[in-house]
Amino acid sequence: MKALLIGGTGTISLPISKQLIDQGWELTILNRGSAKELLPRAEAITADMAHITLVKEKLKGRYFDVVAQFIAYTPQQVQRDIELFDGMCGQYIFISSASAYHKPPRYPFVRESTPLFNPFWEYSRNKAACEDVLMTAYRDQDFPVTIVRPSHTFSQAGLPFAVHGKTGPYSVISRILQEKPVVIAGDGTNLWTVTWSEDFAKGFIGLMGNVHALGEAFHITSDEALSWNQIYQTVSSLLDRPFKPCYVPSHMLAQVKNTDWRGGLLGDKANCALFDNSKIKSFVPGFLCPTRFDQAARISLDYILDHESLQKPDPSFDIFSDEAAAFMEKAGEAFAAMSLS
Image 1 (tube, rainbow, N blue to C red):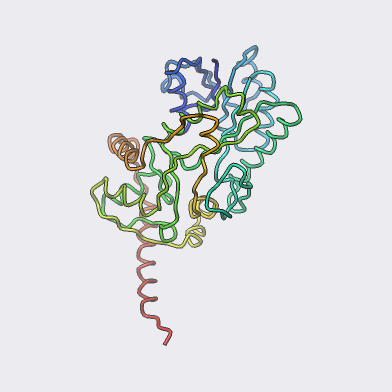
Image 2 (cartoon, rainbow, N blue to C red):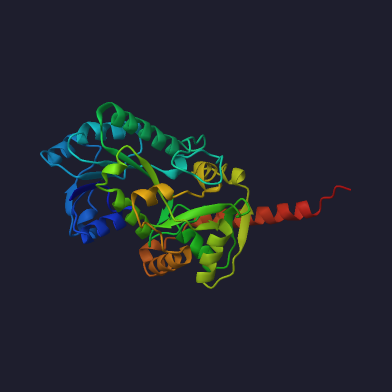
């Protein structure tokens, strides 16, 4: 089986690429140049999808059983893909996002039939618009699309924090190590689903070349539900440090300038996210996510703390967190002094 992965070396796609090679797939990676080092056993095509003429030249005469698109974010980009890959592949898998589901949620569990509606995050609305274009192409011209909606998926180089600085998870890890308060949106009690990327890959590969998946949409997530408090407590415990939360209302964090927290919180992580995974399990028999969060977090922490390149300080986030902690402490004191009598 031949597969073309566009991207192929990211948080979600790299474990998929490695498992495909191990399973004997003939894998081609198209990206701007990271494949040769990370995936030496795959064919690497160095190109930018924005330069469509060059891409057409490099793919001329090729046919793939599966094309998986990990780096398309707008309707214009998927329309370009439809024109390019129609007749060139047996299946086109588009990576959408579970953040596109209705926000705030209407029901306790999200199903694939849940409406796509997110007034808070343009990223999510664009993903939903991409799905519309692709499903129209499926209905009108039999374009062989399958849609996959990941939720919060993480790998060894990352940890799933709701609020962090621009340098990534180490901006929070460093504060935990220093026993400083960490900013948590809301009161940390909403339930959230995080998925280990190695587990996600198993469900994704089960859809590849699966004729029953054409014209269908799937989310692929763990069944483990954790509160944000539990997520941060687990990381603090693994680091042998106390859990020191600084609770800040999500609507206040959404107003902080030079961040994308409005979309990422109000349009995603400040909501409960529990998923009914019965559909992916019916299409991929035996699919499970056996890696518990604490097990995956241990792997991630060991990896991050062993690689200096991932330990980038973020002074601006550190200052913000200190100021937020001081502000919320004063606010707490003010409320404690209030009385209704």
